[in-house]
Amino acid sequence: GKKVANLPEGEQLRRANIYQFNRDFADAKLHFEAVIANYPAGANTAEAIFQIGRGYAQQGNFVEALKWYERLLERYQESPIAKDTLLQVAAAYGRVGRQKEAMTRYLSFIEKFPKDERLDRAYLNYVDILRDQGEDMEALKWCVKTSEAFRGKLPEAIALFTEVRIYVAREEWQNALDAIERLKTFHDLGGATVP
Image 1 (cartoon, rainbow, N blue to C red):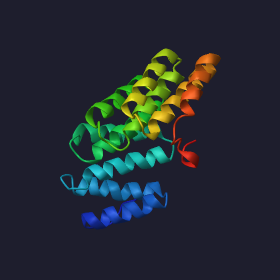
Image 2 (cartoon, helix red, strand yellow; image 1 turned 90 degrees about the vertical axis):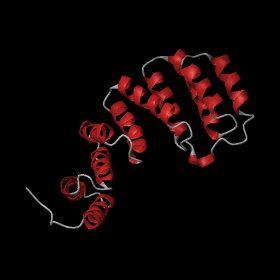
Image 3 (cartoon, rainbow, N blue to C red; image 1 turned 60 degrees about the horizontal axis):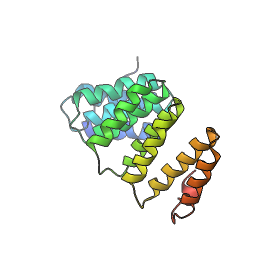
Image 4 (tube, rainbow, N blue to C red; image 1 turned 90 degrees about the horizontal axis):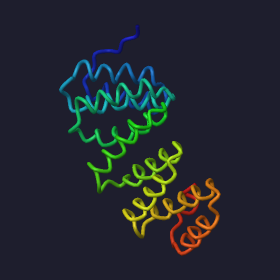
């Protein structure tokens, strides 16, 4: 039943972001909703919808987050924030056990944003979903696709290490050893920044 004061759009957004940063998601949502309601054609409406979804995701309520992310993709698919939303909605679908939807969103991201700096996340998360579903052979194919897409870059090494993990889980020791030998030739394994 709480309401926020009727403020200019920029001030509503500023306050919402402060609450969000401090993990006071309920009060942040009130301000984001005020932006959406009072400035439906405003420049920050898509951002407000995204941040409400993000707040739910940060609380672990992925079902509710999905509602907001899908709303944004439905109404503001040309917005710059739609790119971030596509990755977030894919991750949220994965969290609620809807792997087909997650995979579809990751593939859509790969297709729509082939030059994005987070493209590797879409590829690698796609591999993880396949692996988690027991689709090891398909996951191995995607490891190869990922390696090819990121030849000479860190994601190539991560994809190869994922390949090693799949072979170990399958107890295919020679394949695992062969992949480890290839991995040993890489100069950049990510160091402490890569688990």
